[in-house]
Image (cartoon, rainbow over all chains, first blue to last red; front, side, top):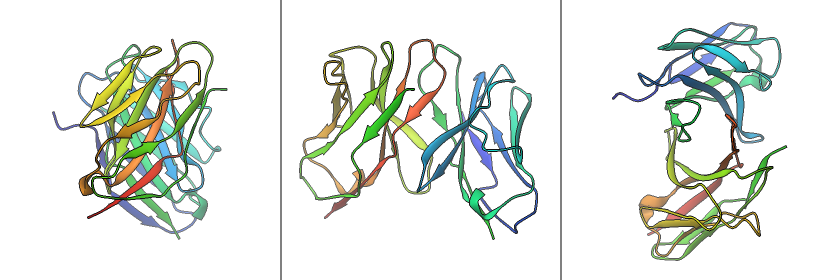
Length: 114
Length: 112
């Protein structure tokens, strides 16, 4: 299995631009998570999907952030408009189901907003 | 709400030294506890876990024991190697929950 695949690995953009981060979970995993990692706040859960449905988006910082999961093999996290304080590493993680405990992480997207 | 507190880093050790990274948690119910490791440029990987009180999780020479009375899950290794240099995250998952809550992470440097 290829593991959780995220793209791009690195993204550099200018303030005000739209940014789209992509994630392909492990086949057969029906729970998907987006996390953000910063030095100041550590690893924060942004949103959680189960069977493609958003279950909890209470961690999404503000309306500029949105996430979708149109099918079981693809999810996007969009920031529009982006701001310098959004600079962080964004991780996608998946797990086989609600009773599974182990999270499988992608390699992350390093986002820099200038 | 649920939370995890772990010792601040960085921790710098010489090869073959003994490692302890402290972790305490606050949670309702009976959470499962985890240590994840993040190597440079990579995502987090599960290192070990324990699901109930007094359980000991172990992997690759690392160990941690679930101590309900002290709400702790300290990570230990008897003899660290340079290849153990990474960031270590303590985490919990509460019973019936879906959110894995992570601590802030502790960076470990091991010198040859």
